[in-house]
Image (cartoon, rainbow, N blue to C red; front, side, top):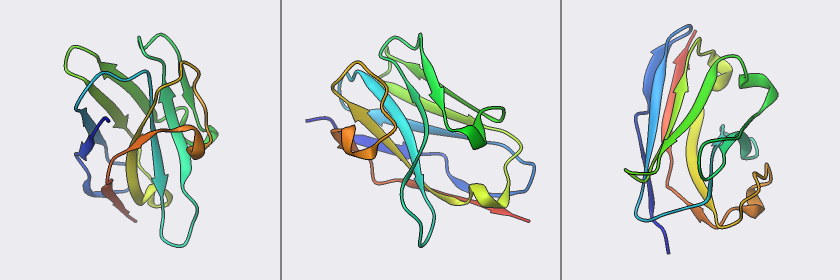
Length: 121
């Protein structure tokens, strides 16, 4: 069992930046960030392979967000730039025991509780 704890969320103005972190209690393979806005389904934001060599991004964040990981610290990060009001959501860290990066939430075995990101217009 792997516990995931997110941090780094907050309130920022449009155009601002935030860096989210996720601390894992043990080693994981694929890790990803998802987000869920009120009244909407949880959606894939970005995923990263176990060694960081491959990343996948949702279309709406490709040029603005960067996912990275530090396996020595069992940590996952999401650097977000040029934030928009539509990025407002709870951001959740997820981990998958498989080696392939999936965008479906059902593929992930472990989830954090989430951290709130609010972007004001």
